[in-house]
Length: 320
Image (cartoon, rainbow, N blue to C red; front, side, top):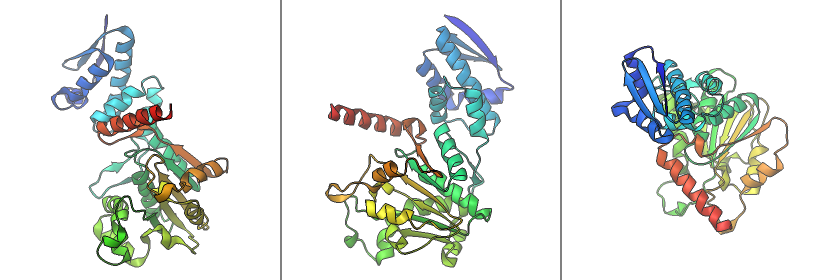
């Protein structure tokens, strides 16, 4: 058993680090099997030497995040602890420098994990990017943020967001209204992301001008999309023909981001997902990047990570 001490700049910084009712520190203590005590601006960690060293690294990384103006959450603590064996100082610095754009509430949207940072860097550098991974990894939200950033910088003239209108156990025909009304529920996550970054009024103005378009995938057929940022969401529910049709809409000066979770395919009659096929076919083409997320990149509630791990474990047993 050893004890090590780190010193923070102020009691306010220590308070931000510990969190409400010391919840952040409680998580670290349980994860690393150590005891953490605060004495003014001194934080003492005691326990097994390896675990103490890991905890000290985690605390220093969390302090770096606090100094960059970010609030520490339970998810932040667990993520930092999970990557403690990597070069934390460089990793955390990279995350801190990855601001994309501001929401209407003035919050800076930035990547929260290294996978997310690689994703937005890839979008900036490549013409076509695939974001593949489980729910809660920010695939769609970050893609929309990058689209808004490019739009505001006049790098593109139009944002186009689309999804396949696949019936996940529900029937479109029973929904009220015309076709647009029927498919709007499928597109709601895309609307929500744009509302968050532009505000409802500005979003509506751009919709009316045609500079922002949110439409089902079928509306893309027969078009060439120039100077646009195009996002295809829920691409695991496309057929081979649909995703090929979408990819060949790419025009001059445009970017495409295709997001999907290949563990949540809702295609009927056991149809093969076009996304899975596209990933195999396009894997080695220059200027196409594939970013694969895992449960470490989940930025929703901790239970989402646990649910994903439980399903993966169950599916692995089924293959045995």
